[in-house]
Length: 508
Image (spheres, helix red, strand yellow):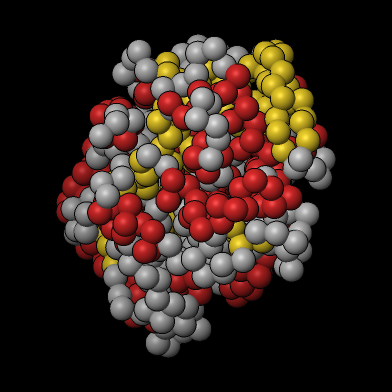
């Protein structure tokens, strides 16, 4: 039985342990790996809170060499009911520098990643110390995203006798947009401050563009034994240069490193999976959904006209109910706001096309500037309800009741929202990039658009939505077949786990 330690910043198996999609993967993949007979351990920082969860108990101490001194860190095991996976968190004040409960921290614009980089650098050092102090070290150390990116470097330049030297280290890229770039020296949050001995090896660690900076992601790509992305499509895209004029997001400056990793046989794409529970929740009726929305105190209603529309249409489900759920950030929503012919934005063109007897609900929050754009549109259109916030208990009913899911991401390493919508029998309109084109087939189980520039992509996005609505209204038998095909698609975590085990975890 292989011992796998999965190391990440997030873990949705623990309450309040998730911010984004990494948490979903770290919740589900370990279960699938355990089902194949592996012994799996998941480790995250405690952030000053997770070690206090019910079922958490002190495990041991470990001495962490960091910033020129030794720090004692506490390891806690957190029991998760009926789970074959072991869950651990590391607790130390350096892992909650701004107080407990914050997984990620927004820095001043002049010092991006400064607080988080120092925090995760300590976390990396703690993982190395634990492996080297462990009587039964892992066979594979599975790292996730830039937050774990210095561990391969700490292994590379550790003493020859260190137990970590014998461990296979693999690295999963979830999102290249965030790389963890900080100065090599001359700052409290710099490589020299954290690990003075590593600065002499800067050629393996530095950013490709800024040679006076360390890049966590680049270091891991260069030094890990194996690398994967979370879809085959994204694995190919990131080997090309990004091009803002055409709207293409590729390697974000790391394409040369990634091409080399691919040619060396170290880079592959493994599509994420989705959970398919045997017992699904019953579908809420329209009025039940409205009452559920009204009970969400954490949600800010951004559209008073839409609330008035709902009051006027209780008991009457919209003819077409469109849906978008996700973070309101630069990766996900710009095509909604791209100008198209005859309208200031693609979203307004869609709202006009579907008509006043339809409704588009958007659930999500993120960057305030983008939130404000959607709020302005919601105030002008009474068939657009923007719910600014996120509540898990609301997303499931929305997936189950809506007709069409819109996901025009500018780039998408894998995506989970389209899988959840398809699981509920809801076709998706998606941009032909990354994991979206790996999961949705145009005209078969959903609708796919492309384009050679953001402007062309936005026009094609609007046309694709119009085509989907036309089929729903004018070709009901074809629409039902598309819905049933979407519901029958399966993106299996068992399949993903088998590929991880055979292709990523095994030594060449």
